[in-house]
Length: 543
Image (tube, rainbow, N blue to C red; front, top):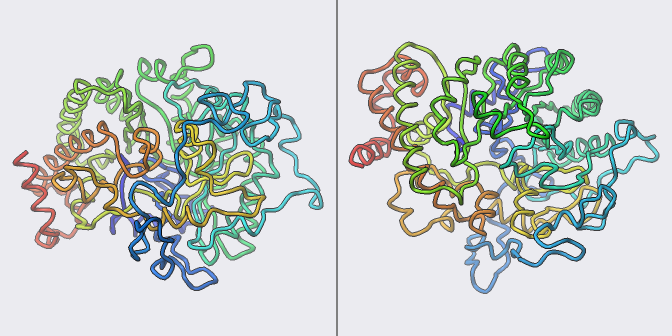
C-alpha cells in the first residue's frame, strides 16, 4: 500500500521540498515513490494551480459530457470508466498477439505506432543544434490542471531480470533508450505544463535509469537552469536497483541534491532469487555497496521491497536485514496479486504480527525513530479523520514521458496498458503532437470515489483510507481502474488490524516517540483527534 495525504506529513514534506541544491533534503525522500513519491507523490495540492483560463482545479463548471445518462451533472466520471478508454483484447495493427508494444523482438522493427526501434548509439547523449531540435507541441499540454510531477523513462533496459517487473526490456523487447534531445524537451514540456506552479519534481525511471548516467549528467544541470530562468525550482530523484552506484554517481547526486528510491527485496537469499542479474547472476553484493553510498547522503531513503506469494514468509527477515543495512524507512508492495492464495494471506498476517511486535518493542519502546510504511500510513489516515478520494497523483498532477515522447498518467500506465492489451488507449498523447486527451484528464481529475465501491466496501474498516487502490494495478488485475483485486483488499484489512493494534498499545502507554510522531509532540491532542478514529479503533478491537 502507498500512503495517502495527511496534514502533518504534507506540511513537513512541503518544507523539505523547498530546500535548495546547497541544502539537499536530509531524509532522502525526494525521490521516494512508494510509499512517498517525490516527495509526496500525489501532485495534488501542489498541482492545483489556476491555469490561464481561470478554472484551475475547479471542474464543476466543466462536467463531462453525458454518456447515456451516466453523467448526472455532477462533473464526475461515470462508473466503470464510461468516459475512459475501452479495453480491448484485440491487438492493434502490426502488433503480435498479447504484446501491443512489441510487434517483434528486433531492435530495428517498428513498434505498435509504427515508430522504428533504434539500437543505442553514442549520439543519444549528444545535444543537437538548436535549429534541429524538436520542440513540444503546444497542443500536447493539459488544460484543466497543472502537472508538476514528471516520471521520466530514461530507458526500459535493465541489468537485472526481476520476474515481476512491469516495465523492463523483458516486457518491452528491443526497447529504445531516451536520447538527450527528448529528455530536454520533456523538461521544457513540464515547465510549460506546470503553468503558475513554482515547485517541480522529476523522477528518473526505467528499466534501470543509471544505465543512462551520461544523459543524466547533462540533463540535470539543463533542467535546473531552465527552471530557474522561469522562476521555478526543480528537484530530481531516481528509482534504482542500487547495483550501478559508484563514487562518481554518488558524488553527482550529492552535488545536485538528488534523492534516491531504493528497490531492494531483502537479504541475499531473497534478493538473488527475486532480482537476479542477466543470466541469473546474484545482485545482492552489488546492491549492498550501493546502499552505503545512498545512506551516506540520504539517511532517510526508503527500502522498497516487492512481495510475491513465493517469498511472503521472508517479510520479517527482510525488515531485520534492512535495519542491519542502515535503513530507517521501509515498505512492501504486493506483486503478482492474482497468484496469491488464502494460505499466502494467512502467512502475510503472521509476518505482520512478528513485524508489529518488533516495531513496538525495538523501535518505539527503545526510542528508535523508523518508518514502516503500511503501519504509519494507516495510523495517520485514521487519525486525520479525512476521507481519501485519491490514492496518488495519477493522471492529475503527475505524468510519465517515455523514450518516444508519449505522455502517460503515471510511471505504471505504459506497462498497465501493455498488460491489459489496450494498444495505447491510456496515453494522454505525445509531447511532439497536437491532441492531449483532455477528456481522459478530466476523468482522472473527477474520479468518482464511490464508483470504486464493491459490495462490502461500506463495512470495510479501511474504506476511508483505501481510495480504491492503485488505478494501474486495478486495470491489470480487474480490467477497471475503479475496482481493486481481492488480494490487495484482504492485505489492506490485515495491515489495518495490525496498525490499529499497534496504535492502541502505544497510545495506552503514552509512548513518547509515538506521541511525537503522530500528535506533533502535543499530548493535549490526545483528546482532540476525530471520533472516527475512536470508532475505527473499536471496530479493530472487535475484529
